[in-house]
Length: 96
Image 1 (tube, rainbow, N blue to C red):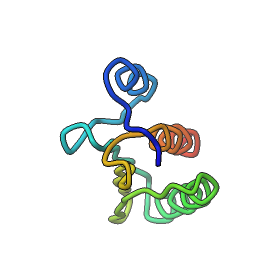
Image 2 (cartoon, rainbow, N blue to C red):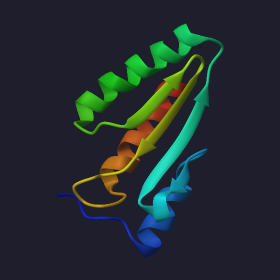
Image 3 (cartoon, helix red, strand yellow):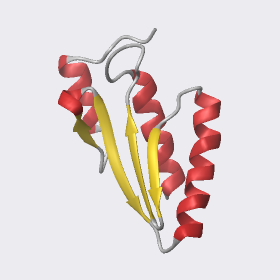
């Protein structure tokens, strides 16, 4: 089980991300992505799915036409961990 990030470690980790916001009392990260159309949104989700499989850490997400909403948390740890940050950085890389 990954340790939950707290204090200065968590603040520094969150500062390294752009566009992500804390949710659920700081136990999760969330970001919305908007694309030109459904095909672009779905292609993005496919790329993220492969990254999530490689990292063995899977997002909570939803898709509505050109929007993809992603929330990250490490359920078994009860909050944000390095696993969430690694996936967030990978998602940001895929989104470019």
